[in-house]
Image (cartoon, rainbow, N blue to C red):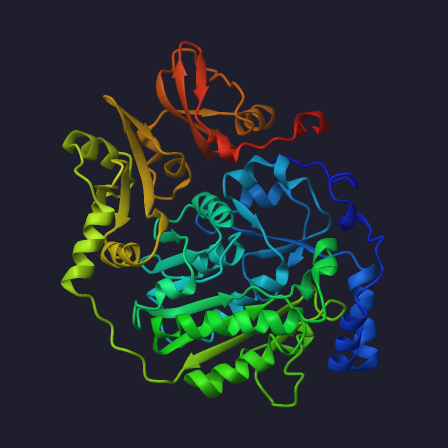
Length: 488
């Protein structure tokens, strides 16, 4: 069991107490028109004066008991089985189990996807999370889906896509693609996806409580400008959703232009029907505020325990273009994906997998080895032929001369056969040093070769043991930079 220090006011001044009180006048007027004087005043008061609730979601693939024991867990998030509110906010970055992927810090309203998923009347096999960074909703989708279903987690902005890839690597499920593309890249994949989740870029009114910049960036024209962008995203990707498939449309804003009005337009112009989501009255989730009677779901601070969220589940009723994959597409995909791999390297890397028979091991164009689940390997290659991908399946190893260096993602993957590498357990202090990419030494001075650094049994990454010391192989771009050891 471990305990974490609490986050100080210096670490998060706006979380501790909001000193900024003013909202844009146009925003206040919009909220009053939407919610009425009493409802508008309640929302504005909550955005100013109430601390945002803190919540986490535990990783079902890695077990949550150890992580839960060290966090101030207060009560469950009612619409998500793995979600929990915390009594106070710890210094999450100083918890090695966060970096091991044992849990994800996620705002409770965003976990409502779990409730929406229950209304989908078939088992999805291919899911696209279109605007996925930083990864909270994608990791939740991966937890909800069948093991042999494919999740494509996409983010068009490259720096944000890198963060998405990091968070999904920590989550550890092999049946994932992380891509870096705009909506038009997926449009040629006619009727490919069973579900598309579009948490579209928005004016961010639901972030006003915890983000000063969101207030300062908002203008009277923000909602209409964002609504135009949202429509462009949804209408562009629409051909990639099969008839009878589901669109999960969501924003973190309050106004009707970006919410009910977009849903109405999807229904009328693209061809879809909204699907009600079961919401017990005690959850205090609001419905349609435009008088159309749409089965939409609004989370309003001051009413629900979470930040602002709008979500609607829609079933595609319009006829969809037939899926197709020509010879040219297959050839392009194969050429983009594969390079010649050394047989000995393939055999060795296969020994690092718990179930090698369930994977196809191949080399990418740079010669790095990866493992694609056989259940989705063909689909993965088809997606990779259409859009830029940052990772497919589980990255396994990088050849370097005669050496085969295991990838960091393998250490965090549920596909790893842990017995393939010697392990050395780290104290919390040494685990934080490891995560800062500082020197750590295994207790067993006789340890040699690539070894798995663990904390409370959770793999953190690899090190190469050499004569009583170890070369830290934690990725440079992932290292934590704050010295939390002074707070332990």
